[in-house]
Image (cartoon, rainbow, N blue to C red; front, side, top):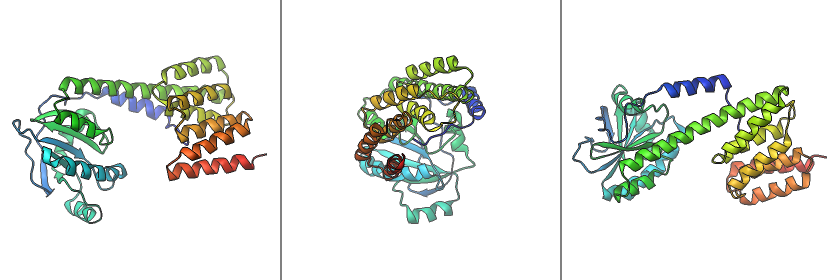
Length: 313
């Protein structure tokens, strides 16, 4: 667990900006026309109301690492569902020759287009309050059916729409649930930063404890965030109020919520135990985490932790 928080003031500003956004484009609305400067690959697409093709409009860029990560999955989806009238349209604002050079190294097996003066981006993304890529919109029969990250199990949504097992009411409910979850995550992060302020100064332990219990109670759906706070307490021995008992409660709950199968969270719990002087328990937990890890970067991190603890007197 190596995550650190952004500055509190910056996050509050972002939250205020997010709350000020008004989403003009809603699920069920007529999908805006695609304003395209040039079709780079594939046939031109016209989103007609009577066209029952399922269109996935994805905004991306060659310089965007997550966008590049999503390409193999999008290639697979296009190949898998092409016979079922699914068409993926990747839209970028980059120059055509930049995209063509990129395609020589990374094939993309779906339609590609260059946005005309960012008009399509404004009509879809900005109008929906979206400010990052990759981001996708699903359109069918001329209406917007879904929006989200390509990594948000988009194939499950595609299957449900194709099988008529997905209504616009379902879509609206799921988006509302996702928004509530995001709001809770942002609130938890603010509470966690406030807790660390109390812990850093160490003057108001009662307020820190009360806030800590609120975080513990409301973090049921966010084990990774509980782990982050536990990590900060465990490794930062300069905190004037360093409540390792609380850090252990956080790490134990985070691990329990993930069935004790998340190597990163087990690593956090091991550091909490180590900070409490329970070296053998910490080492045993790290060894368990190593057996569970299938990620090279996490495995390397766990091995470093194991070596550090073994060498410590």
